[in-house]
Amino acid sequence: MQSRRWIGSSRQVFAILAIALTFIGIQPASGASASTSHSTRPATQASTKAEYPWKGGGTACAIRLPIHGIITYKLFTTCPPKRVLFIGDSIGLTMGIQMSLNQSNWGTLIDNASLNGCGFITGYSLEVLGQITAMNPRCADAAEYWEKTAHLFRPQAIVIELGWEDSFQHLINGQLTSLNQLSYVQMLEQHIKSLVAGLRAVSSSPIYFLSVPWSNPGTLPNGQPEPAASATSHDDINTVIKAIASSSKNVHFVDISRYITPSGKYATDVDGAVCRGTDGVELYFSAPGAVRYVQTRCGKALQRGVLSIIRKALVPARAHAGF
View 1: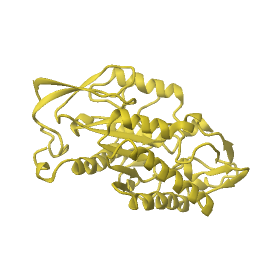
View 2: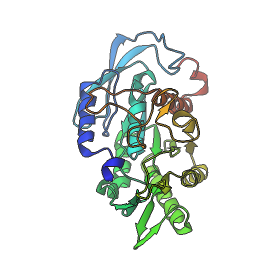
View 3: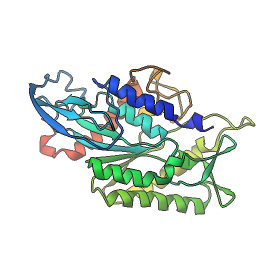
View 4: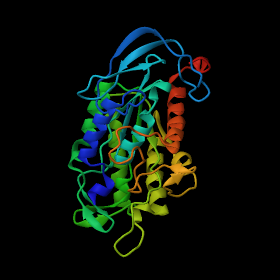
């Protein structure tokens, strides 16, 4: 069951290798180091200004990509690019990949620190498609890892895509608990607040919670739908996250439904093109065994929507027209 919901470790290794091999125009990242080396090479004039409103047109700068263990630089024309830390689960990992593709056009440098199979709540097994499934052991210290990454990367914005795992029933003290129980909701709220507080201890940058998207992981052994994918569960998890974001300083909630589920329900294809992976959860990013990543139509829409919000917030109003 775990392999259905997580990008396996072998695929994570492949992802890092693919980044190294295809960094020209493709830079999904993992790690926490970034540095800048300015160049006198003039940047290509932005013929795609309407498509990429934040793309600069001045002198290009070579920026080291935040890929742990690999020294790779990319030319940016918006210098220096805004550093964006992406935190999440396997959905967040694949969203981060989509938003990293061609990121130099947006003047953003994304460090994708997402961890497969993690949620706000950690340390408990989950009931997934009718079977009790252990959580990824990496999740036990996920909060500490994200805080450390934020401290080292010094992001100017933090994006969080978590909550899908929390939509499943959790086995706590021998009892299955879920979003329809007050005690579980209160525990979830405390974990979300704790994550925000931990990040705030190392960064004052704005935090953007992305909504948990509609998903379709499959059916139970009896043919019934997975409860975590129900409309009630979808509404409940997003209501909790949105409420905490709304009550926290410099924390925002961004509904991404219009980009990847515009019909108001799960669909593999969006706007006539593939959007989601074969597991019914993650965003599509490459064919099995392929070296190059693919930016899907919905991924590009997600990138435009989310990065536009971040860039607009980070740039003074008087500079919007020319930056």
